[in-house]
Length: 428
Image 1 (tube, rainbow, N blue to C red):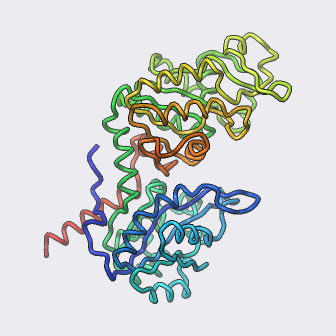
Image 2: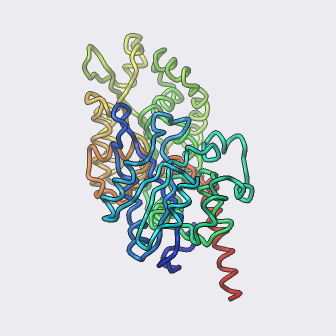
Image 3: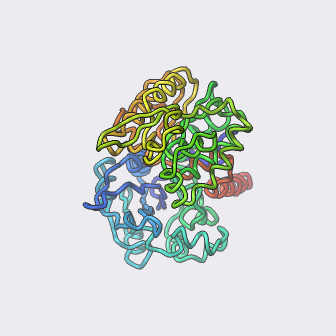
């Protein structure tokens, strides 16, 4: 996979220019306090923001927080502006208006070295995931959306730094490129290049650890990385491990099967069987699991679980000690390691051991290590120092899509702008 065909900040002059900056600073929120509990994405946005302000740009930041499918996180972004101010050393003003008259007037009044964060993009119907899925506008058709009509005439440079939303075909992500000079930010280039090391030319042996609760993510990438030879070994945890064990013939019982059925996940068992039959030597499955017994952590081997009806009344919510040890050995001798999704319910201290030990092994591994996704990073911050990983990717869905070999709406939009801007430059 070659490098991204897009221009960078180093290719343009930003001094005195009004810039629309689109980062992804969507952050985990404490449901009770409504406060941000993980600032990783905000921290990753700072290099681009600071570069623009250091060089005298006038910066209007557009970003989202939450969605209708993630309603508890759909909140105003005043705290985001406060955190950006602290991290950047520049005051980042906030206005709770996305692109209306008040927002437009404030953008027009920006001076060099000033920045303003506009209201939550998800206040606009045209920016919601449901709108994207139902209406399906092309980037050119999006030029008629309120966001683009309102903001594009006020700026002369569009900077996208939102790889974490690269799988989204929303006006803020793919439409401004149609009518404005466009470059990628530091984070966009960093995420693309880090994932390319795994996606195109990983150092072998390359190990994938796939866990967590979003098993559709794991299954969407497994076939690709196995078919292309990127993955030498896949280690499984979380619900992905439950599905793979059932597919391998290990009976986990009615409790687990009911759990999967209630979440419409039983269909993945057939996919798992096919993967195991096609690549029987590439998977390393749990040989023991942890569960709750009398309020405490208990463990049993998969053989014991398959034979004991009493054990099958439990849910298995972490990896057992034997599995942890075998996974750690694989990680220690890997040339590359990619991890997405925790090993179990690490939020419960009784069942944090699998995630803790595996994350610590990845952090200290000699190979090239990439961790990505919200829960993955939150767990990594809890049990390790993020600086110990080769790269921490802010993306979740975009990362999965990238490693699955699928097209990315943002990358396609950036490449179209690159072609146009290059052609215009050649004519000059």
